Image (tube, rainbow, N blue to C red; front, side, top):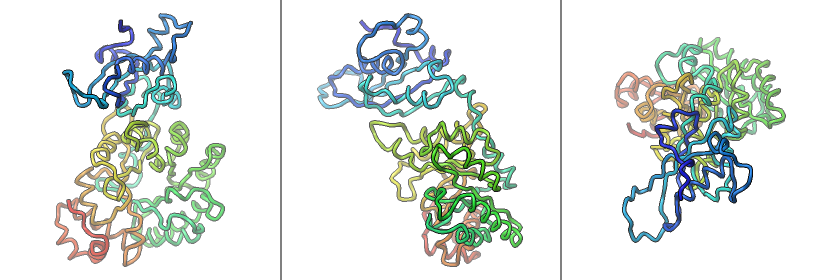
Length: 425
């Protein structure tokens, strides 16, 4: 007989401090999915693959996972001659008391005990309890804090990542920075591939790039903020970040999936400058269809929870085969109201150029950061002109004007459209 203590209704689960995890699984049609769900609920909490002594009723009540829903995909209601595999969504409520405020233990509970559960699943949705969420402060600045810091009130932000990605010295990088900052770009960041190599140390980059920013400011009256890639190995991470801040870093970037969400949270929690979280390496967490977790959790919910003010996210427009729905859902995870957790600014990169600005603003609105790389350094009139072309594209879209009129007025925009094309609305 089915153990009813392993189940609870959704209405009852919300009254307790449970984390609600929804998994997608495909099983042979003859497999009893309810038995599989029970094995997961027990195996990820109090038990293992065989009955063991020592499990008390108190443990079952307070520490055992409970099955909330099992849904067929497609939603089959009747018996059929199906002999192949069937898809299911299994929703399990995990007691928050098991992991309290520990992200590593939360992730271990959600996906880390496959040998006991014998379940190949993908985490497709995650609803965190209020008690768990209260343990995190989220973004220190958030969208409105970034607008206040920069004085940019309504329009999208524009960021450039220096190209080439790596292989140059701090002085050469500073020259690229200066020539780009002359266009008035809001932020410049390192490419995610440039960390702290001997030929281009991050601390020296901060000092050289800040000098370049000040030199450009003397000409333009606009201060460009440099986000230095602070990603290094764990044993150096805390000291390295402190040295960068002491060197004058105005913003930092961390590859959050590469260092781990808990380390990212540790670094961002008390950082006095804006934190840009980069999605690099997160693909290994979400690209599988039958394992890992969904991209909107990996690159949306978790980095926001951990304190990213800006999250560099992937899109379907730059050559990466991401579904448009997933990119839109990630942006919503970053920006929709979430209690005391401030909205994080979505930053879109990969193939960004003036001809695609209209599409991005239509998709996501003005609370975004547009992040061109090659379209700035590769502009036929130079990097500063590449930045101006981006601003010209933002301006005509925000004013509701037509591209045809804008290219007549702006030489830089016209050159960019001719070289990089127009992606439509």
